[in-house]
Length: 490
Image 1 (cartoon, helix red, strand yellow):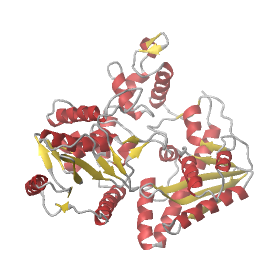
Image 2: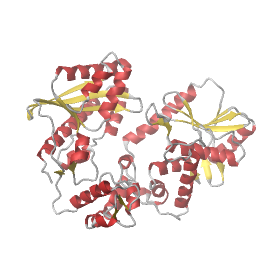
Image 3: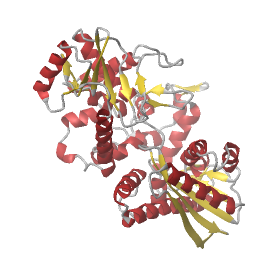
Image 4: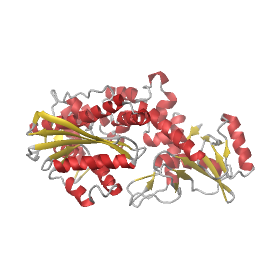
């Protein structure tokens, strides 16, 4: 039977449903504490929402499997206005929507999500495809059974919003399609995987980090010398290249001029500069003694004082709980000291206080050069300013993050350097440079899980673990900066 979770997983990773169905379950990685936390938070939020409902509903949670499906159909026949935790099926489709709501002469399905129902910016909110395919499966089953009201399922999300997913509306101007078309394509692909008429293959991406098949897939990717082991060469670009180039070694030994026709390459969606970039990365990885290098002169500020900046955020609660800085004078590591501004509870007052203290710290250390890694810090500080406008103005935030004196090192890495690594994350690059985090499980996801546990019991050892991890993130940024400034130009 094809389930909503299979469709969800396929949107996230086209290889995961195949692994879940056919791979040896003993080769799964241990479930990460963060993923376990996500499940627990999702369940807790769903229970909270249901407990707060002020409308009557039928709860089918006590039942399972066939009995639950029978009870669901009895409830539908009785025209129950709201059914919680039902089970419906048609043909090879099986769904367990959180909600079935009677509207007019039929039912619409809904899910309760502990995340936002939409993605994209506030000016361009869009339904999430991995939610949409789940809701579409429920709608498809209802239609096949003659029970559907309309193709407009809904999500109750973490913000308390009900967001309607209009499955037949066009999703974009550049590539006009509908969520229903996306669902049908996803469903066809899952069917091919289930029936083994299509073989999926792994591809390296940032989403691999939390997957329980990471170790097994990485073995496959390394053994096959897969092209996705090159930074920014993802599954889509890999699949476009495959007819001509199958491995990193083959790309390194190939003259790419043969694939260039005028101002374009023969590869759809891959321009000449992009192909040259991937070629250079393959050459570097396959060289005898691969060393990172600068592609041109890198001009960085010469400042007496430097601040290396990193924040920690719980996206499930939209809460920034830590702003950390390593301060250094005259590029002397002996002068380094760590400053942290921590929200001591989950209140808005604590979040605002930590933000205000971090802002005052930066102001007191002017003039200085600030280094951070990726635009996440800037994005979060913009949101914090909107939430707490008394701390500083929007203009002050933009002035702070002026690239003249506040440097995003990820942009420097991507624009000016090449590295013999499979990605450009700060963890990967700093560990390549022999920097070691003191924690045995260093990751932003782990920090979120630690903060959740700390917020429940206020264990000072957990808080110290969070602070130590954040300090190491700041130090890793400093290690990377020092190496960038010493790179040879090729």
